[in-house]
Length: 466
Image (cartoon, rainbow, N blue to C red; front, side, top):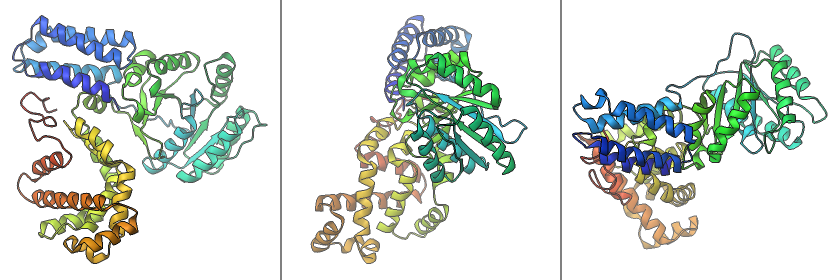
């Protein structure tokens, strides 16, 4: 997410962050590059203009000239203005006082609306502890009703049946009545999408909105459409009293133009980001965390929250006690760590949220894909328990047997054994003073990067801490 924008802005701002004095010339040159980076990221022109004007106004004023480190203060201003454009703070869902709360989902066909209904249902059930009912009012596409029924079963929420012969308003009203009887907290109403904005579509969804008076009306839009996402959101906002936006397919959007434009153009907050195809790939939108990631400063808070939800605490505690006792980190432990990484979206996703790890994250996404994780697990599963506990036993004949059992090559197994040895060394370092820093240096060399001050490190010209 935001890869190209992060690369451009990181490079541009690194040159000014170490400056002891800011002049009108170096501010002007930097802002020109920032402007170009934003336009290339497909950020809407009015948004870019407002952003640059605001940064310039603050940068040439007393705020920077009185700072002990003007270059770093300039970067901080850029970060704060990015947050401001995207909304400054997370805006949670408003469930109102009446039960059930009704959430109406609107958007164009192909934006990922039905999938987003399921993701939001799972989010509300697991994280907000809500009893959720989902219903499809898309009478034009029978497959959409079947799709939502299947997804509802997958995420563990109740599905209210509907049919293409019914009217959308009748379907939604019947679902809400059923939810009241069954004491559901929330009803999510999926609506029909179109290939483009048209009067018939808008008229129908306006009628639905009037009949339901939903607590939330969320516009679902594909982030990969860039400026068009913001313009379509504006068209829907003019027809409907939107309360928020869900940006989908953000994981495939290297530019980030939609995220930076939607709030400014519509005045409505982005409430969630769709980060992948899986039903748990929906995250609340935090402008401050996104701004931090755009500037290559990571997103440690989101990483901690994700770890708390997805990491097996008992296994983590068990491994911690084992390492503290000086016991060896074996291949069974390595397999457990691979499985935990998979749960958290892989090494690339983890490094993406750590400060200064942008390039390493890109490399990890290329190297440690799900397919690669599967291959490593398969090789470990093909070993005997004794071999997993004592990898030094694995000789030539054992290697051939393991590879035959896992459908891999000896070169793959040798690489796995080498990676395990490096992980073993890192785990030993973690138990000592300054262990985490040593571990990160080890990870960097393991993946082909430099240490601190090198291509992957912050170095003296790197970004300031938060």
